[in-house]
Length: 612
Image (cartoon, rainbow, N blue to C red):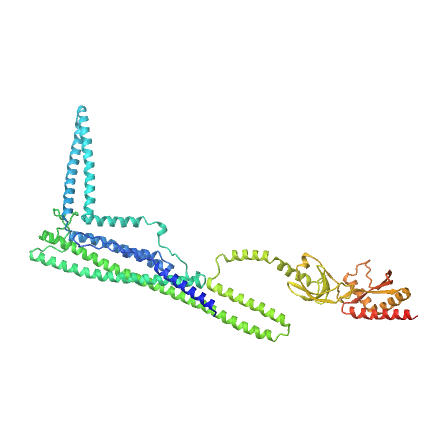
């Protein structure tokens, strides 16, 4: 590894560490516990709303349909337990009303005074209303003024009572009313729950997940949910222990009250109904309250306290039972998540096995390909090209397979495939047309390897005819020596459809060749021309006959068609003598040998003519 690579790896590692630290620092804090409703004397009836909040938060993270019944049961159980907690808090206030502070006592006195004034003003208002109905017309105006005045006073009394109530709440009084208000708010929130916030699976089944990446993310989500369920279950179990300890204290208080009642000689049943509330400033904080401990130790007060304590014991037992049920629901819910987690783990391991197997197969396929192509008897450059093409194809297939395993089939795969196909059609138009042109070239009027053709002004012999390309060995003009230039010219097969080509070969590869000879002055050109023509006819008689037959078959023997392969000669003046040109038909493969023989014969004729 070079120094640059080491530096890059170090920088990336540091950045990754900083990113992970940032993620850890930016975790969501745990929700704060709901504040308990406390009384001023410190005997706070704790109303634990975190249990319901936790159940609702977990229910909003439902992922699988199997979780839905458990989530609903958890929310319902937690809600029922909270209702029991509110009732228990009210019973606790009835059994042990709080001792008001001097400030609260002053506010309570002001509240009592305002209530008395309101009662008196309302009575006066009713009396004036009765008089108004019986009074004469002359007295009604004065009575109406009094009614308006007393009505305004009633409204003022109501405002004073409301202001006193608020001050009493702020000073720690009216705990009973505070608990009732919290209970009403909770009930209103439950009634106003929007339909969109109802419990419903937020995810999909494991079978609908796409790819290992989604499965890993889902697995991490399930792991986090399991931790939250276990924490919630532990919290509920701890609260059960706390409620059990409080129940034991309630039993002790209940037994103590029974003993005190027995000492006073009272035999009232513990389940006696609640009686009317005693009067007094300490009991004015709630209707029907029992006086504080030591304020009244009468048989009636003790009997009412026994009834309230027994109700509290029953509510505490119900709360313990509800929380035990909630802990069991969390345990079952954790089991469902554990099952789904195991399924996801199997899916992730299966995907990993496929990826590893694909990599191993690619490795062995590459080695097998090298061994297979190593024994092939083809050109070294073609062997390297073929090995590179097949290697890239195998790597592409492996990469696609691994991608499909990692990210899965993309959504709307058919639509994406259609769009990709349309884009590839436009981008690969030339290759598609070339592929179709290959079928044209393979037809009856096409070309074959070894044919002498002309494509786009380039003449040569066909040395390769592939699905997309045609390769020519370039030669000169057909009328000259026609020696190869040594250059390979490649054309896409689209010329067979979009352009045109000339094929100078039939099945016998016949072509016209020309012999040119200049006869200097002093020689008989006609004699030499006749001798050369006879020589050409003699040399090409078999070729002429076969060429005429093949051309006749190629033209389907149409009537009136005259195809002649007989040699032709022309004699024309030229600088320094007379030029004789003879055209004849020959095979492409015999072209150079025949021309050499004819030139030798022409030179010999010239020599013989010069010696005469």
